[in-house]
Image (cartoon, rainbow, N blue to C red; front, side, top):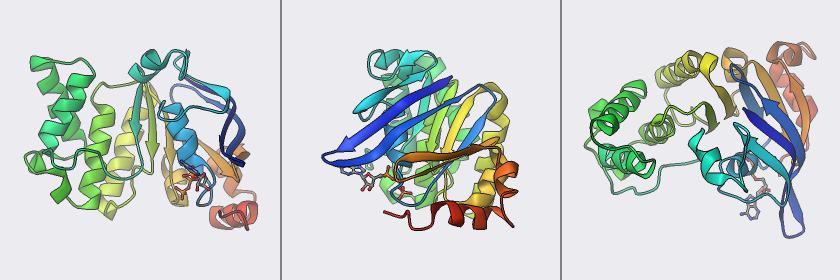
Length: 238
Ligand SMILES: Nc1ncnc2c1ncn2[C@@H]1O[C@H](COP(=O)(O)OP(=O)(O)OP(=O)(O)O)[C@@H](O)[C@H]1O
């Protein structure tokens, strides 16, 4: 469902993502790890079509993210870093807007909004402007937007960032529930999260892919996953 080959992004003389290649099949949840500035968000932005690669290719469901961008985006739910745009909109209006942009109307749109709000537990704040919500609720609005069209591919940039422990648990359960039917990439700094929900762990450092392994195999390289991660990436923070 996701195929990345030699994906590269340069900002002037600086190479943020450097020849990254991997693929993700339906049923896989890939944990995307790396120190701050490793190139995780840049890779995800290229996958989502928000940034053009300098070299290499990325395909979503067989559609190139640059040459066949609309078809690629139809297959993709993307949760960007940070809070959703249009902070003055209410949760319900924002999800309605996102759904209409995706071409849904009437009862179908209403049902999709209701289902996305239920999955992300947003019903209680549906009429509240996004800017008045706490960080965790804003993340969940972003997640609801990514689920509206029930896409086969999800690219989620730090989906549990800012959530309280109960909500982290809920979002991880939701990812696990959806996993059999989808190809999912999540970036995270929480290593336990990778062991809890991911079938594979990919580590990037300085823009390069250095590990692509099952979380248990990765953890078995040392006393624990934390130590293994530090050993592999020490000195790589940008
Ligand atoms: N638009 C841009 N212009 C210039 N440099 C950029 C731009 N976007 C990202 N970078 C740089 O590219 C590198 C990779 O950034 P990126 O946000 O992809 O890292 P990350 O792995 O997601 O980090 P974090 O864990 O902190 O979110 C960083 O050094 C960053 O400063």
